[in-house]
Amino acid sequence: MSIKKSAVVCVMQWNSLRASDQPVLQAALKLNSDYLVAMHVVDRQFVAAGSRASERRRAFYAASVRSLQTQLVQRGTGLVVLEESSSGSSNGLNEVRVSSVSSISSAPATASSAVNPSEDTANPSSAKSFSASAASLIAQKVALLSETCRVDAVCVEDQNTVHELHFVDALKKAMAKLNLKLIVTPNAQTLVKHNAIASKYLPDTFTQFRLTVEKSGNMYRELFQIPSKLPPLPPALEQAASQWHSSLSNETGASLEMDPRSAFPFAAGEKAALQRIQNYFTQTHAIKTYKGTRNELIGTQYSSKLSPFLAFGCVSASTVHNLLQQYEATHGGNESTYWLLFELLWRDYFQFIGKKYGSQLYHLRGITTSTERIESTWKYNPRKFEAWITGHTGIPFVDANMRELLQTGFMSNRGRQNVASFLVRDLNLPWTLGAKWFEKHLLDHEPCSNYGNWQYVAGVGNDPRSDRYFNVIKQGKDYDPEGAYVKLWCPELKNVPVSVIHCPWKMSFDEQKASEVALGVTYPLPIVEADAWKKHYAYSTKGKVGKANPSETVGRRPKRK
Ligand SMILES: Cc1cc2nc3c(=O)[nH]c(=O)nc-3n(C[C@H](O)[C@H](O)[C@H](O)COP(=O)(O)OP(=O)(O)OC[C@H]3O[C@@H](n4cnc5c(N)ncnc54)[C@H](O)[C@@H]3O)c2cc1C
Image (tube, rainbow, N blue to C red; front, side, top):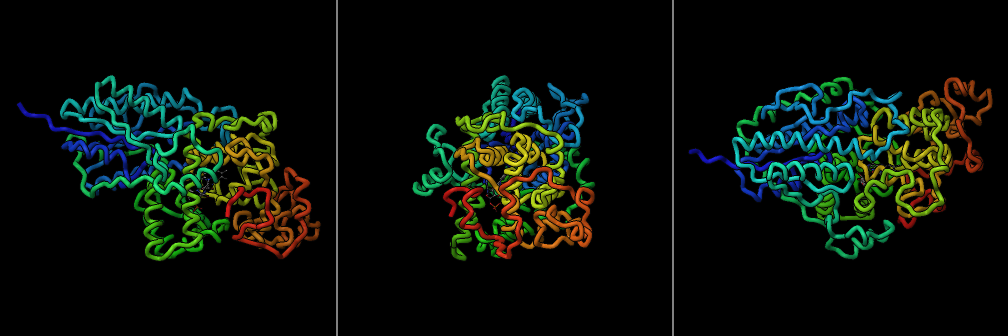
């Protein structure tokens, strides 16, 4: 009688698409199994029908999965990518499009590819149905695998957010039914060890959180070391691992062109992430001036552009931190190198907030107990929302940012703060609408950072200040003093004089003619006008691009150096 060889299964999730610093691989390797089977189920949020992700974001995701496949092949193993299929198909071990228990909705995307205002982002039934079917796909494969191998365990990374936690829970149930061991590894999304701060002790403000971490000195987690050679796939699965003819990549890959103006012209995946870090750190030393440039708006070098890679887990925040420390050891550190860590700690803080508050992250009321900002403050208005999402509000600084997002999937942090504040405070639209639009289009959408930042701007998050207002005229003049950014994304304003570039509606008829602009025809009149803007209409030459204005008390995060 032949003895069955052993196998361990690693479930890779959409926010952890990398081979290095990978907790599930490390947990699996401890079992010394003969075979390693890495599996990924295409997450329903990226499936085209009724997708919550834009075509560009889906393509970035698909390319990140492909890159993980390549990384694992290079390490001597592979990745089996499973996709739910609404059509019945045979569920053999090598079949990767598997009919699922609850089939995928074939509903078309909502009107104008926008978000559905009445849809509950945290819709628990839809998250649970995906989780159940994804877990069932894995269970089907594992059951088939156990006919030829002894399955030692299935490993999965713990999560911080509700949707992802549903999946871990569903997998627990599915494995219990199969009587198989499930190893849930610590969550590796944050720099700070997942259990270093219990939710009930999470400080109420970012500054308290950061000081706690910095004072402690030993809260950062160690990297998970993964060898360059991993156990192979069982022969019976080799074919499945090489054949991901994804509906996603077929639909999206060909049609997407890179806008030459994009601030994020990078490929997806682990290799591209590490190349980007190398470029930003050791090749160009742009990191050395980061603190002074991070509020700029144009080009690849004003900030690290690591967020899309971090969102899909193509690289971990801990790896970035580790490489940053190596850079400081070799080239010296300064305020700018420290500031990158400071921003990564913001990311961490939002992760801990997400973990603590669960589905409240997505609620209009947010996580605040303050009743100052309540639902009635915000009213859905389709005309205003359409103008915002398409970049036709008539306020050039807002429009330029919104067009950049739509056309490239990226927007600077300065831009995000402004368009978010504009939506919430000037248009009085519910902040959740803006967050959902960002979720669809941002390549770097990550639930905690996206919904957490929106709550922060809307005054319903941690530190619920109600006076956080970004004056889009003043901000435009401070951060785009020559109007170069506005002209890049709103070319119809290219001849408008710098004195009125942020308020073109102040042009006389003759000025409009000279600038080849017909307000209300070639460029919209502003859909709102706030009193607070008026004192900033007058032209001044005191532009301060790239530097925070020290006198700017409103609209800045408190206590930032
Ligand atoms: C309304 C709004 C929505 C946002 N949505 C997202 C989102 O979905 N995903 C996302 O990663 N960031 C989000 N941010 C934060 C920030 O704008 C982006 O992280 C940053 O612009 C990404 O560019 P970068 O990688 O070049 O950042 P850098 O300036 O180079 O910063 C380095 C890293 O620090 C982290 N970071 C920086 N600022 C923040 C912040 N305010 N909050 C959390 N992490 C931060 C990111 O991981 C970033 O990659 C949002 C900000 C706002 C105001």
